[in-house]
Length: 195
Figure (cartoon, rainbow, N blue to C red):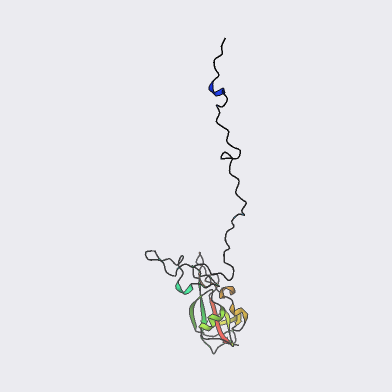
C-alpha cells in the first residue's frame, strides 16, 4: 500500500530560515542609567543673572490687577524680588519737635499720617522725614488723656535700623479692624527725636 506524500508543512525546508541570533527580534537594550531630574533651585546661585520679573504694567487688552502686576515703584532688584501685593502701614509721626511726649504731664501733639511700605528699613523712614544721624525713632504707646509712654527706640546709626519696619510689628494690621470690625492692635504712633 502506498502512502500519500507528506504534507508540505512537514517537508524539510518548508520552514523559512531562522533569523540570525540577536537580530531585530531581540528587544532593545535598556537605556543607560541617568539620575532623575530634580527641580531647579528657587533662586539662582550668586553670580548668575536674576530671574525675569513680571512687567510693571499689564500688556494691552489685559485687565489691570495689582495681584499679577506690581506697581512700578515696587519692582525689585537682584537682592529682593518684587512683591506682587504691596502692604503698607500708616504711621502717625509726631511733628511737635519741642516736646518729648513721654515726659511730663499731658501733651497735645500734632501728627503727620503717612503710608509706608512695610519693607522699608527704619533708617529709610527717618531719611524720608528729613532726619538722619544723631536721631532716633521711638514708638509711642497711648495711655489716654494726653499721656504717652515710650516704647521701642531705634537709633539711626544702630544696626537694627537696617531691618524692615515689619520686623518690629509695624504691619498693615496695625490700627485696622479685623473681620468682626474690632481694632485689635493700635495704630503706630512714633516720634523722631535727637539722641
